[in-house]
Image: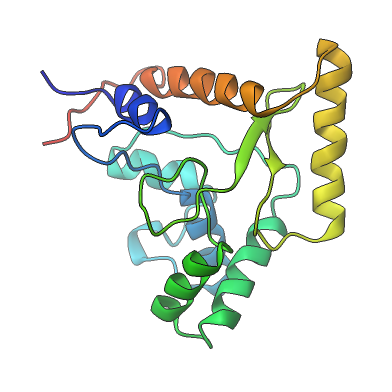
Length: 187
């Protein structure tokens, strides 16, 4: 029986070996960077939002809600390109090694996996621990403020245990299909 994406994600979070490595690309970052630079591939060049790329390719829709979209992802991309002296391949390698490009609970042993996300009181994803992500003071303070709002709303501290709970809830959403779309099995 084939594993579901959720089962793969949960196994990875628990430190277990899934049937294959789950893949959850940050399509929003790729789209924003290529759109800004005018380098979106021809089929996607006129798209206004990365969701359209997902739909065109038959991928599941993953929502990334960042109130600071427009300068947060550029900080990561710009720092990585600076580290790679303009070479995207070298930029990726050096940024991953330095933790500038990082993902939570990374299944790849070469990725630091030090970034810890949590939801704020409105359900948007924030950084409980941004680790080595190169965000400025304004973005980091905004994250802290939104997390404090959740803490006040819930009446309890948002900590690592809450982060694990949040990722469990997020993985449940990955099981759901957008209305009118059928699940496609990966060959």
